[in-house]
Image (cartoon, rainbow, N blue to C red; front, side):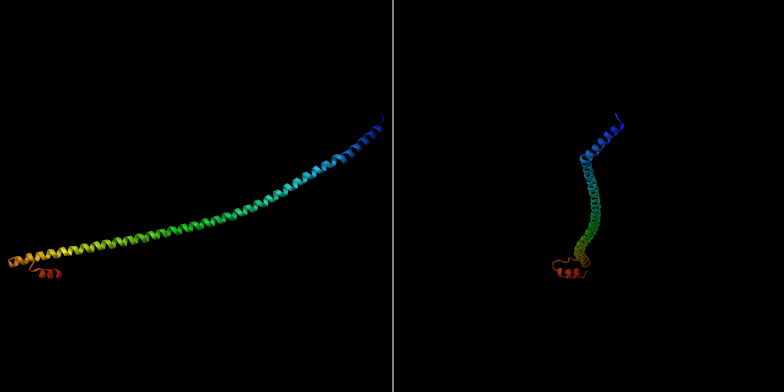
Length: 156
């Protein structure tokens, strides 16, 4: 065999191989590479869009958190205000109750004083009658002298 013929056969085989590859294999490979490139590009775009959505979601969450904090602070303020109001109402009720109790006690004291005065008047009138009996050494009729005794009791 001749080296030139072998080289020529290899050259023809190589050209045919390259032609077949260029016609049938190369388009399939380039199409697969294009599809792969589109998938990668689309994935990168989706990742960028997802990152933007994540940022907007984080911003929305921060805004919602701030709003919740404001509402919580407002509710705490309202609760404190209501607690102070309840305390003030309780103080007012206690003060009213104390005033009512003091007035009731004062009324009881006044009644007791009046009752004691009446008892003292009755006792003084009895003592006056007894004293008058001893002074006069005679019996004084209570029924006959009742008006005078009432006048004496009124003066005391």
